[in-house]
Image (cartoon, rainbow, N blue to C red):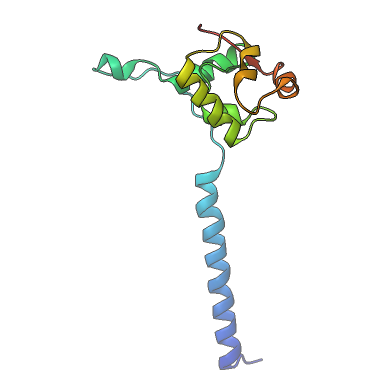
Length: 132
């Protein structure tokens, strides 16, 4: 059995497409795959300000400590992860915190526009107020 020129070209194109798809799938999958990086390991740093833990690191430590998110330290992503809080409400919480300072209690969240008693009730099992 002999393969003609058209069949050979189709086989070559099919092989090229398969290689391309294989490369795209495995090439980008290595980058986007969830990898946990332990940021608690210490790296010597000459500058004292640079060696201070970031707010993000403190947030992670707080979450691991008691499973609750400290609304006084939470960043936008942590706030969005809460039930009933989207990008808009997370922004309003951050704006309120910037304008008025730390929350003194979780009930103070109802002073943020768009957060009422029902939303607060959904959040109570997930949030705390520390560091006031």
